[in-house]
Image (cartoon, rainbow, N blue to C red; front, top):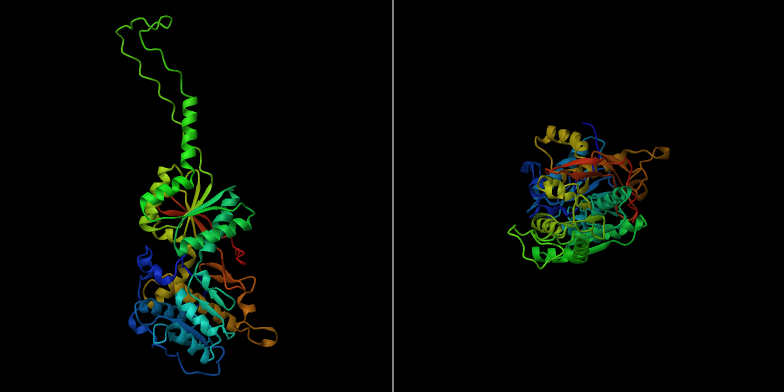
Length: 444
């Protein structure tokens, strides 16, 4: 079976939180593997050989609430390592006694040359505490950039990658005044930080950012302030009054003698001032990050304060792709994500072997395992193996993945090549900008 490297389809949330109460829940848990595919909790895979140092530690939840997801991700990693010369997988259960810290400690003790996982930001933080005194690199499956550091990379599609892609595209269509109206959550703050960084990279003024409340009333009131609604409405009223036609002379009244009695003709209705639309808000590009009910409140608030997605370039998280069919009121809005068409070959390979659709999170483990296998087999000068060095992992050209080109930075961040999708008037979305074919800088 041919080897493909994949990039994660994770869109801005930690994998476990995205399966609990998120619109992505059904997507992330689709096509669960049979329990026979699970590895034994805490056990290695096969007998240790002279591959010590080449062996690959895999840290996943193989029991507990996320066992099925962990099992599917493990199966994807096994699929990538399907040749006799591939490194051996040393599998550890992060929900076994001792958690992710014990699992990482066991991988280090076993002499594993690199660690794939864990799944969540919390587990990755625990595992990193066990590896920080070693030279063992870790490719974590979270998208939380707070986990990233030298020797610990995050494979999830992080908010900064999405925002950087959209800001760059908006600048190219001459947007100059950026703003962000965001939930007061970890995702909201990550998107806000990314907006500041991206605007700075493009030499733009610092964006206007507000973190909003949770109720419909709070959101609408905050949007009034945020969009300068009162001053825009006052200016429109003044303009309407100034351009209103003069009051007409009542029918039947002699203009030369207005006090004379009117005829029996019906009175002329008073002149109505012309309706003047409100001026645009003090921004021409607006970043949102809400989903679910709160996104509905934000959409209603934007309508109330006359911020139109036709005039203002609205941008949002890649999570919108999971329910774009319900977002017709945000027509023309953007989100950044991988091109799903590029994933189809991996889907076909996975279905041929496991007879069901893989979850997007299976991409992470396959991608990581295929990357490691490629590095393990890449020759260096003199025939020596490349190994899992920082230099090899952070090569400038990155890696070709089924979901697009990706690469790593020395600081633990991941560079991505994402597409831009636009919400259609009838709901749903279409790709309006294909992946660029080159990696974003992502050097921070």
